[in-house]
Length: 157
Image (spheres, one colour):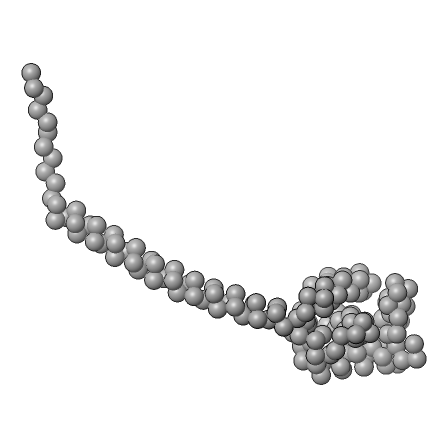
């Protein structure tokens, strides 16, 4: 006995229409993803350009000095690279800049590493050099930095 197969009636035109609709959705999603990828590429390019302006040796020295200074001032090293103007963060940042200057980096190079202009760096270094305005806490922190081997932070050193 032969078994009869059931014939499914499939509307081929509906299948074709559904396939084209799915292809259209995929194309729309691909366009959105292409735009997002372009934006990400622009952002990545901007980051690479910003990082490429800073020599690797300076970036490493800045991280190392920032960690030491942040430990002395009892703050996070990330704060030294932030835009905050609060004390003692700003003065700790100025100390970091002064130390990097004594390591031989220019104010322009330091400014690039900290996303500041060279004038701001020069001003910060002058603030560290002028000991008259420092309070007791800051003076103690500078003494501690000197004990760690960072000398010549103040005038007359």
